[in-house]
Image 1 (tube, helix red, strand yellow):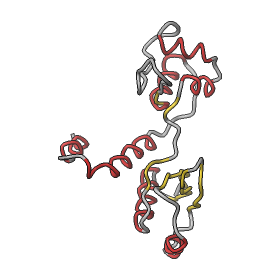
Image 2: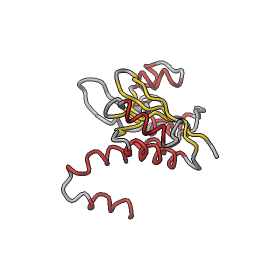
Image 3: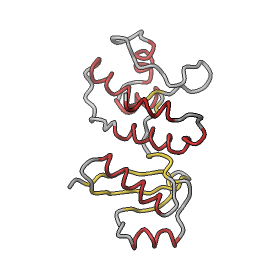
Length: 172
């Protein structure tokens, strides 16, 4: 069975008792720590798919009273980040984004604004770079993007009146 490696951001650091409970249950494929001030759990989880691995890890954390808020994935990027990742100049990437260079159709920013930093989704930019510019990039596993959406939904589901109206869209 394949091993899936990923990091979950937690609501807090686990107590010694919570760690003991997890390890007594045979869950020794996780390391807890701090990354950039965030409490994290790093997993090397055996499972048939990445989705299964993430789901079982989240359930294990739930069982000891910890909440996973998201995966530590760098999906939000600036034009400078994109330039760094693909080895092109920031100006070239800015021109792709504005349509003054390249084939056009660059993915829309997440926060279109003239004030402050503009962000894009790496998961949307990669297919554009591959398809439109022929840049070879590692295949993205979109499961991490979807898992983040699910984890955010879990956190806010009790604050949304008639949440089923939205979750029913998944069955459509």
